[in-house]
Length: 350
Ligand SMILES: Cc1cc2nc3c(=O)[nH]c(=O)nc-3n(C[C@H](O)[C@H](O)[C@H](O)COP(=O)(O)OP(=O)(O)OC[C@H]3O[C@@H](n4cnc5c(N)ncnc54)[C@H](O)[C@@H]3O)c2cc1C
Image (cartoon, rainbow, N blue to C red; front, side, top):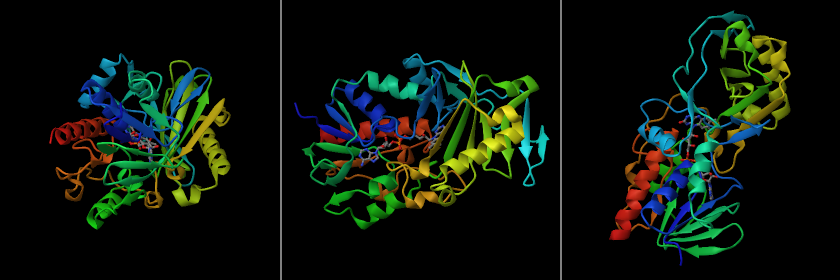
């Protein structure tokens, strides 16, 4: 039987929407451009442990995430933050106990955030998720055309991709200019960032009563945290180098970051077992050129008037950036999925 709803995008919004439609008995097919599910959730494996290159945390007071981890039996633990913080001045002086553990009380998931993705994907019906074939164009008659030339029709389409990424696709007929302007105006949360994780045999900085938390005016890492798993030690940092300057400089960025970790945490920090580096500004499917400009604050996300659907619409935009609350966060992606599912049910009932 032909699926009724197409979900474009297999990040947390798209997967949670698929899960909800399945529970509501609505036929769907999910299409993901990348060869993997998760979108901004990316967890790399090293020696049997898992390390997040996308989101690491959720927080108390996020009811959907709390319900989710309980429903799927995921194990949660607090961000390690016992011990002293380090601060590196622009001149390279390292000061101990300057500042505070900025992520104290944040919650991590054993196995990394990929555990969320796996838990959702495992419960979806066989054949309902297709990866590695990006949608190229979308028609108002609810047709999708894919990179490989395939064209498929549905009753409804939910674009579970960041608004700016959605704006890059081809629409037939063209979207109204106000709709296109609204999509283009919404920055994709964290899309301009890059994250580096260095993995060690053990979290040796804890022996010196260091939390692994550090901030730096010198860089290239500006905010560093303990990212250890149950088995291995790890430190991760956000790059403070602008996206334009990072482009094509992967090796130089990694080597400067390791030199900085050695300055802060001692020579052992300069020789990790493994290094993972993801520059999200270079990731098609997440970032567009406009996202290279760093955000100075968390935008006031939500659904602008130009993206409110009419009853005759067969196309709906959804992603954490359009969530009714907690936009930008994982919690927002779950809220966006609920919102999109409500739209699907309402619009199919018309
Ligand atoms: C470095 C980093 C750190 C973060 N830290 C945190 C954190 O600690 N806590 C937190 O709550 N949030 C954090 N976030 C934000 C969090 O990752 C997002 O809120 C969430 O993952 C967004 O999910 P989404 O499904 O809405 O969008 P996405 O994850 O972006 O999913 C969109 C999907 O659509 C796919 N797609 C795009 N174009 C097409 C196409 N043409 N055809 C088919 N598929 C397409 C993409 O490949 C992607 O899989 C972080 C993000 C980053 C990048």
